[in-house]
Amino acid sequence: MKKRVILSVVLASVALFAEGNVTKEIKEQNPNKAVMMQGIKHIKILGKALKTEVGKNLKADKTGVKAAEFCTKNAKDVAKKAMADFPENIKVRRVAIKYRNPNNKPDELDLKVLNQLKEAVESNSSKVMPVVIKAYDNTTRVYAPLKVEKACLKCHGDVKSMNADVAKIIKDKYPEDKAIDFKEGDFRGAAVAEIKAK
Ligand code: HEC
Image (tube, rainbow, N blue to C red; front, side, top):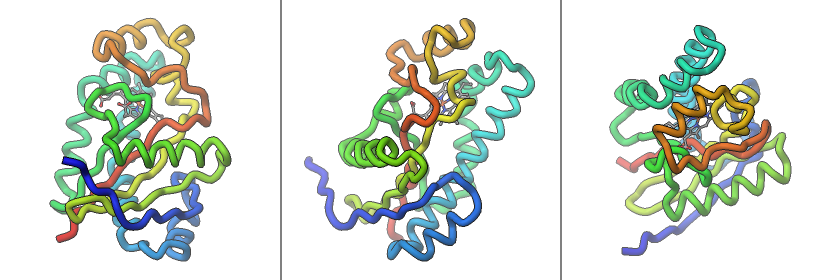
């Protein structure tokens, strides 16, 4: 069955993960603000939970081996635990054009938005834009773009300059890995909040 993708795409010029006046900007600019705020709130909760754990592991072991083991084995559980406190109608997942885990392969609508976000990031890397789009089934999706930071390169950078053990852990778990060879500032993908109308 062909999914029908209709209604509005709302863009706001917001540097999403730069803290500070983000919330204010969203409030001022976005007509769909309530949904967008709800999505971003939950994306941030999940992002923070994951980042905290990856950070802890990186601190304990600077080679990145511990962190890579965490990402391949336990990240799912941390995400699950964070989402257990979410309202039942809200889920957050991650997608990417160049994905590592096949479970994060974009669907048709994801791909459309990812391409749009990629273009936005590449044409003006200091201003990335969240996208709110009404999908099917009374579901609204909020896409928050993710950019590659220096710390991400340990596991998503040039394989030759990665720690050999980290590269091996990743290659063993994801033989078809596409999420490598990124550079700092590149568009990495998006966190997507899916909000079902109640
Ligand atoms: C310690 C290694 C490590 C670091 C550091 C790391 N990642 Fe990942 N990343 C992974 C692994 C492993 C997966 C696959 C997780 C899974 O199975 O869902 C992944 C998956 C992802 C995904 C989901 C889409 C996909 O490709 O499957 C995104 C988006 C992502 N990472 C972005 C980032 C960003 C942005 C940073 C830096 C802020 C980062 N990662 C840092 C190891 C890492």
